Length: 155
Image (cartoon, rainbow, N blue to C red; front, top):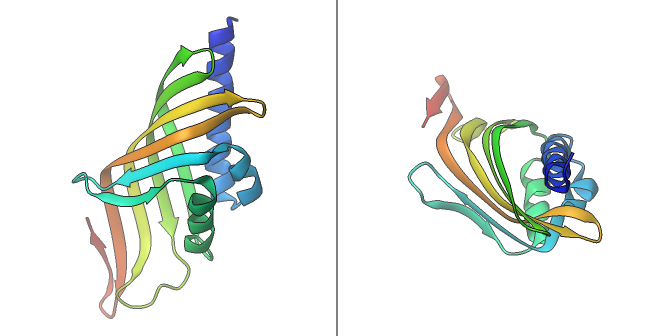
């Protein structure tokens, strides 16, 4: 196996860990996969910015507080990965996620189900491969909202 293949394998494993750490709310381990000056941008299907972060701690803190009481699943598929230098890898993953919120109350989302693509830059440092830039471009984003007539899906 070449060095490039080995590095790509390490990034694939780290991305799988990223998904598992978010779903199990293992914030200390998730933090280890992210560079301190991490850039995160997430967009809805129309291209509007949903969230934007310029550091790891803010991103992890919002993940922690927004997922309290929620059940989640994050899956990535169909990777396109290229080593662009000795210490940088570009990766694109198709993705699907679902969040089931605890007790949201009337008019608030009880569930979110989305699809899209992660576009990432990974950097190799002393602690291994870490995400330096993460952009999530949604292609489908559905919310189920609780109402007094039951739940309704909003796209």
